[in-house]
Length: 548
Ligand code: G6Q
Image (tube, rainbow, N blue to C red; front, side, top):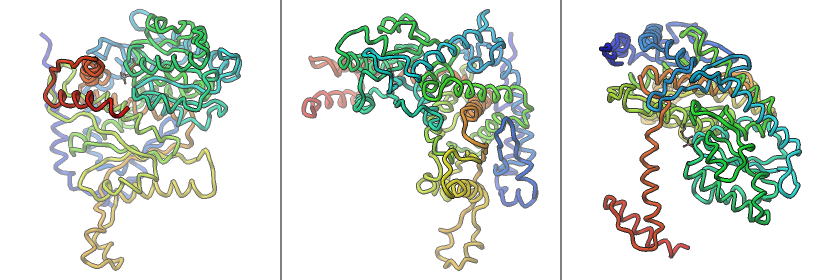
């Protein structure tokens, strides 16, 4: 008989944290900083070019000690090694979780099912680089002999959010003579708007789908094929010049009509939301070139090595992950705001939303037992300073605790007058205001009438991390993404959940497939749903004709 698995809430570090929380609950950051004038220097760490200031968190040395103890008790080290060794830690899908192999340098080796996957990774990278060079140089010609000026990635979820985010983040490094667009939604507006001003003879579609069966992607891919062929005189041989695929499913790719010579492969040990550095990043490589793409991978790898080898106390993803657990489970915080003070990172919060919420939005443990603690947080955010003029009010003076991650860069890629100093002044000011606030005494001393004082008080004691790096480069983006990937892993390990499956997206997909024929049938269908769904379907069927 195997020993019973220790439940998280039964662990001694967890119990100690619960007791400790009562002691520190009312502690104010003002007090913590007053008691330790060096706190801002002490509770900060730097690794692989990223500086993390975590001093403005509601933690004491004792809190941190207990959190590290919790990580040890939960076997974080062993779990990290298991992932890097290629063990099948995604147990519900019986898969290895090896996004780290996608950025493993040539010459290293990681064995999955008896095979070294690193040479395969580099073979695909070389094939991508060759293709990318031909598109970027204009050597690859479309069906009518014109070079490609527009690239459209068709994919959804993990096959879209990473490519979109990376393209926006690295736009500074992109080849401006090529337009990049992304179509994901099954809403026809997405496709129609993406192509409305484009010439099919200059347009390349990348059909990105791990399974090559996803409803949205396949519907958009067929629409793209029709649009392309219509514009190119209907000759099906045009497909070979205007369509390439990124997938694990060669037979479905050729069934669609794409020559597998134009297919870029990846593997089932790459999860969708962990795939932006696989062939799913083909659009990224086309935009920034193969050298920059390899620099992106180097950045990922540097953070992987840091995560694998740094002591827990100086380990950036571990620190971020443990702090997230602290607020989720001991302060009841539901959300984390990610606030990049860098316009190029405007899609970073959306990307992180999938990474974190699809990974850790789970209600049962690895053993299938309902958890008796909170897991996952709602990640959200907007680039600074825009958010300051909208939702920051609630973070500063609302009733909820919302830990914030501020992300900023010392150098800007677009120096213009005083803009960057002002941007950075704002990010530092926000973290300061959240932590220290403004007391009633300070408000009164400014001559505020008594009745107005409560409205103008900032309680402070609102936690934040500040992540500061020198400049947004491809390499830096890789480090940043890997840091969050591994923070998610750290949280999932503590919560003892499978961070790599996504069964929660299945039910809606299945029900939609059932409803499609009910909407499309000529004859009135017999509906067997609940009364609400039945009514909505009937109403749609009745009114549809009138709106056309
Ligand atoms: C990510 C999820 C999901 C997936 C999409 C697209 O981890 O698995 O977002 O990426 O459903 O799937 P395909 O790439 O198979 O089309």
